[in-house]
Structures are given as structure tokens and as C-alpha cells.
Amino acid sequence: MSKDWMMRLRWDRIGVVVLVLCGMSSGLRAWVIADEASDIDGQFNGSEGLSLLSGAALDAADVRFAPTLTSTARLTDKGAAVLSDKADEPETEVLHVVAPVVEEPSGPLPRKNVKPCTCSKSTMKKLAHNPYTQHRKRARNLPGSFFVKNNADVQSRVQRGKIVEVTNSRGYHLGSLNHSKPYLLKDAKFVLDEIGRRFADAMEGTAEEGASIRVTSLTRTEWQHNKLKRRNRNATRGQSTHCFGASFDIFAVDRLNNTMKCGGPTWALQEILYDMQKKGEILVVPEGNCMHITPN
Ligand SMILES: [Zn+2]
Image (cartoon, rainbow, N blue to C red):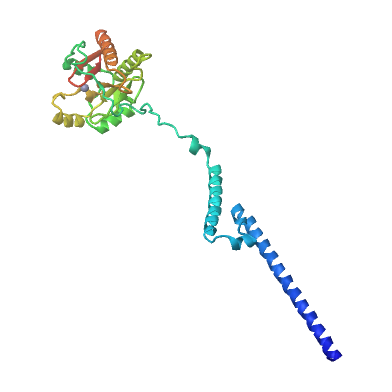
């Protein structure tokens, strides 16, 4: 062999060695990068399970475990999210689960499902019957008295201060005024206030405190009275004392609730009316469904 051929052979061997070394170097680099990438994923997911997938272990892992581990990671993430949500929840949603409180009914009387204590000739037998003619005579003679024919009469008398407005007051309240208007002559209003005040005083400190007298008929125009006559046989045929603004009807006593008894309030109201009637302060017509009162 020539010297030139020997030199070429050596360079070939050197080239082969260099190629082998380059190949080994590339393989080593690829393995290191893969391992680093796996570590980054593991850190990103924050899952201990995923770190098992790094490097050679990834190849060795049974494929059936891959979704399981991934699910575990998701569950772990979801669990963390749930915990985070719970941490953000206001405490009131968890702690303020309380039993419903049964509250006392409130608002104006009468109250739903609480029956009134009736005031009539059958529940207040102690009261005498003052003839209606006596009521009518007194009604015509009271200060400011005037027969009210219509709404215009009512308005003119209000403007002149002959009749005064009646609103809910201590011891009494207004019922539905379907056939009258909330006005009375001053003397009649004075008597009503006095009855209410004495009744409230009588109830004070008792189990029936808060019970209130329901007043249903006050000043009635002639038109309203004629309309009522067609419906109600008990309405007087002649001039009603309500048309003078002189009388009012006590229909019932309303209670705050059903635990209150009717006996005490009814008895107290009867005693008050009886006392005032006996002293000559009021005239009474005990009717089948109310007490008709006129100042005397
Ligand atoms: Zn009446």
C-alpha cells in the first residue's frame, strides 16, 4: 500500500470516530431536554402525579394510568377551586340557617283570622234602650247640627268647622265606611274620644291590652241613608240621626290576636257605656249588630 492510501485510511477512521461522538452527544442532549420539559409540566400542573410521567418513567407508564393520573390532577385542581370558592363564600350563607320565627300579626285592626267581639243587645244586656225619638230630638239641637243631604253639604260644613274629621285614635278605630263619611259634630266626637280613652285605660296592663273599639257609621248623607234603607230593614224610616252628624255606631271590639279573650273587653265597654248612659252623657240604642250612640 502506498503512503497516500494509508493517510486517507487514517482520516476515514478519525471521521468515523468524530461522527460517533457527535451522535452520542445529540442523544444525550435530547434526553436532557426531554427530562427538563417533563419537570416544567410537573411544576405547571402542580401535581405530584404528573411528575411520575417525566423522562423514562413516561415511557414505562401503563397507558391506562395516564387518564387516571390526569383526572386526579384535574380533580385535585377542581378540589382546590372548590376550597377556594368555599373560602370566598360569605359566612352568613352557612351560619345563618335559622328556624322561622312566628311573628305577632301587625298592622291596623281588624286582623285577618281574628274574629271581632260583637257589641249588640245580646252581648251588652245591661244597657237600656233610649227611644229613637229622643236621639233625633237631641241630634237636631246639638251645636252645629244641620241635616246633611249630599256631599256638598258635608264639604261646606267641614269648611265652616261645624263637623270634624274622625281618624283612628286611642281606644278606637274606623271600620269600613261604606254608608257614611268620617266626620262628626264636635259633641259627638268628644263623646267618642271619651269612650275610647276610658276603654284603652281599662285594657291597659291586662292580657287584652291593645284591643280597640271598631266604629262603623258616622255622618251619613241623605242619599247614603236612602241607599242603606233599601238594603237594611233596621235603618230608620224617618230622618236618621247619622244625617245630622250626631251619632256613631260601635260595631265590635277588635283583638290583636286570638289569645285575647272577648269577655274582658266586652264587659269593660259595657260598663263604660252604662256609666255614661246613667250619668246622662249619652243615649244608646242597643241593636242586633251594634250600639247606636248619640251624645245627650
Ligand atoms: Zn246608628
